[in-house]
Image (cartoon, rainbow, N blue to C red; front, top):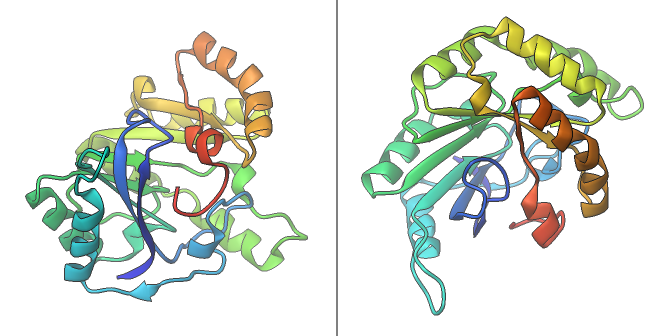
Length: 236
């Protein structure tokens, strides 16, 4: 697999926020989100090809307990888009055989029969499409590829899922409601809305209106704690 980075940190989003975890970030993505905060795994993919055994060894080393640090029993496989690489199937299976809790982070545009304990799906709204001045050549491919209804339905049926939507402005909330109306199989109790931004101040401003919206409409508000804790930087 082509791997951009492997590191240990604390989950900052979703139902496992605050959980010590090892992150395996694959390189490569089929989309080009305007606000992507890991461009080194998508817009300009970096990384090296690593065999499965080496990935497992690095994860095990990082997961080990150390002075004043307990062992980590959670692994997050993220990207880029990890579901583009079929090697994720044996990787996830091997991690689970070693007793690790495995979360897969995906945009929900590709399906692979991967084993995991939590499928974290991040459907892309219209706000993700790159701007004309940013990358006009990617507008069409991104728009055409950002929704895969059959994949979303299959993931919702086969996995324990959480669905996280990036919200940039209030109008995006209406788009989420339209999305959920098209997918009644998605339990609203598993849906989270998180503010778009890479600075704590920006996130706080959007949280001021997004969190009340979530409370009013029976959705979960999902802060991006890793930005608050560490800032927008690699390895966190």
